[in-house]
Image (cartoon, rainbow, N blue to C red; front, side, top):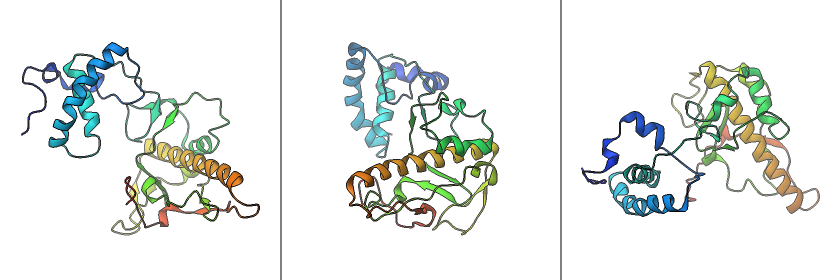
Length: 237
């Protein structure tokens, strides 16, 4: 094993509970300049070391957590600013979990007009699906923001109560497999798909209305990502 932190590092003395409660932090950060400078000095030292051990996405974030723990600057975590992983209990889902399944998609589709207190960010780095309704950022066509490309197909407002399963898109095997969703997953997956789909459609509509020649904007909501088999990476390949 390649050592990252020093043998006498305070980070090595943390319990699993302390590590989980105070250090898995992500943006936005709020700190004094002095504290942040202290963390960043160690962070820049740890990043290449962590990458040698774990040469994958988020290596720099693990290095941040390790650096903060080493300099003994625990974070007060705010867990209601963001939603992303529908199975995560440490995100802002608690602000909507009281809604019944049949209301989840309706909230997502009308997110801009609700007066309900909600997290400020929907971080769509996951794959979301309920029934055959699907969103995955790597399946969103690169030419989505063009005049010719249609808008995304939007689920029905009651999709959250219609399906208690998901059918992964091709090339999943066996094709057509129904994977069960529990009640929590039903509600959260429905909200995520609906809020992301409607928000992307609103943004694309605004762009088309300002960039396309009159009569040239395709505003049909027929683009079904479940059926899009071409995928791309975050580097554009």
